[in-house]
Image 1 (cartoon, rainbow, N blue to C red):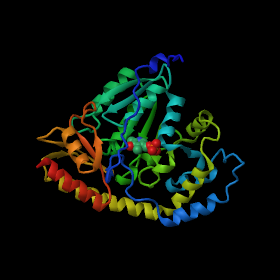
Image 2 (tube, rainbow, N blue to C red):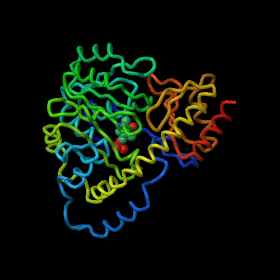
Image 3 (cartoon, rainbow, N blue to C red):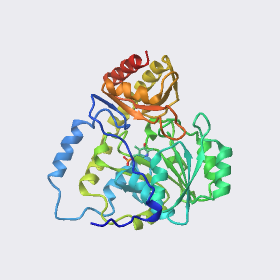
Length: 353
Ligand SMILES: *Cc1c(COP(=O)(O)O)cnc(C)c1O
């Protein structure tokens, strides 16, 4: 058997790594610690039994888009839905980036922004964040004037650092960026404000969201963006026909009926986050502010990798960012249930002592 060469520009590409290890306490992928309500499961089972399996799904996913639009006070023509917000971002990049075009990110940020952009054939320009991982406007000015990016990414709250961009930051970047601004709000519900309010037909801004985190639906792979109508219409031309299966359309439509329950889960996780951060601040760690459902921290007197391994020996899995560029020795822990967080806190206290 002979191997055929992959595209030249992909030959040095590395895959996306996030180890799935079997442990007692899994706090490494920012999932919700509990599932959606039982009433959701029951309603979904009933709807599933009625599916016309011989028929293609509703290609426009109108019912789902209408339900999601209602969450944001917009119509279905301002909502684009896909298989996870990663596919939403991929469709945006296929439409507005690609070969000969430039995409700007501000690092460290969500690895998949640059990764997916490169797969579309675009050139990625990496700007730097400030030492506290906030957006540095002079750096934005430099990157934007030198590279004239077709697509610029912000991520608020930023994964993996946790910080929220102020409204003035998003407005200022919008004023400077020559192309499309994408604000990834995968953790938007945990933060105090959303850039969705800045969207209108004349503004080249989209905001992406996911069902994987706050909606407790990571198993379903469902994400969406809110944007101008003209832009959503362009994305609809690029995405594969019937890309969103009927099961997922039903699951998403039912999920948003349980908005109050979702908000209650968010409230509980935010309270847990504050408790975990206070407990971590007492230890020999630098803890970064977070507006998300995870916390980034750096041990002061031990290597990050050693702390991560020590936690794993206690059957607690968190995310090891210690070898990522600009994140030397940093670790990221997802907020879990109070019992899981207690297991994590007692394990890290032992590991550090
Ligand atoms: C988890 C995450 C996503 C999620 O993606 P899905 O494909 O919807 O699961 C997107 N952006 C960021 C910053 C994330 O952390």
